[in-house]
Image (cartoon, rainbow, N blue to C red; front, side):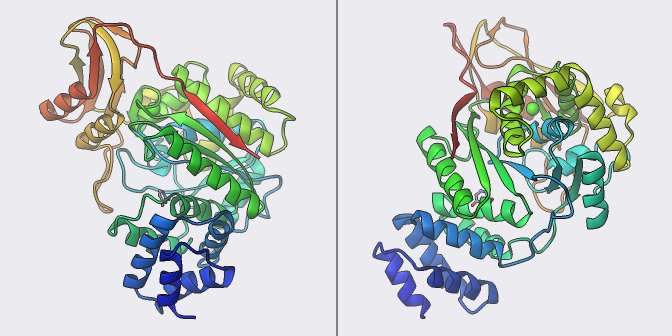
Length: 434
Ligand code: URA
Ligand code: CA
């Protein structure tokens, strides 16, 4: 087989066989196929697409390019959740203890990563003492004992995807649905999930801005799941504005605690109940989504979900008293209000800009080696649809410097205030499952 013939075949709109895709991915992993040929091939895929079978084979080849995690020592059906990313997405922090309280084993492998805020691990490290430096045996042991544990990402997970994603990033080929879908699903499958719940974001603050693209991505991932025998459901949810109120590390932990107490923001609570219900059903802990949702609501109102969070945090070295006393979380020195300049109704909040502003305060990493400040971030005081008076606070900056004019400007300009009443956007647009 020659790579040049395979590039030509894809360029001309033909489908690859299983052997051809395996040749491409293993050749690329081994360094036998050079970057320039993979770049040309990725561009051909960008324009010509891939069918369902090719996409599944590509995913499987990427899974097999590195280590796979064996979660078989953990009892029960392991359901993982993945979000395609947004701003202020606190769902993992809520869902891990919530569905664990419902008996679903949560074996979370998570990253730090670049972004507006840190990753789930950074956020959890705002709980004093919390550590993800545990061995694989401790990890599986903790999940069996407490139903939930978090560990850092294994280095050699889907190396072919890592290499290909890096190349796509600099060859304008990221935005291809089969390539995105196989990239995401390969990582989830290699991490050992039996079943997967996907939160596919849509709207201005999301990777996929158009609903039709988000739906196609969701459908493609659900089909990969079916072909590779992982039960998969996808929820398409709104990211036209940040989720919840808090964007920051410790601030989001506080928001997650509030939500587990039943006192969280309406949108975050609703999304967690929706995603959580799918997780509970896929784990076969409830017959249907209605029963699952009722079960989760009861776990919140009885305080069991919150107790589960304490057990989980303490088992990994975290100070559980923080959960009853969130004022023990790292907090910023200054709280600065960003005020509205006129009366009206909030008709837009550009999530990306809020994210960038949080990053300017130090909540996220710009490069792999930058330090993050767990205490800083932004708390929104208004969301789309709310009315506002001139001088009222739109958002509170939590900062460790008083020199925040540029950041405050960015937050102010991310809000659009209109004269006429404005409806808040729907939270869930669609659900795609088998
Ligand atoms: N996220 C991923 O993990 N992979 C992609 O290709 C795009 C987004
Ligand atoms: Ca949030």
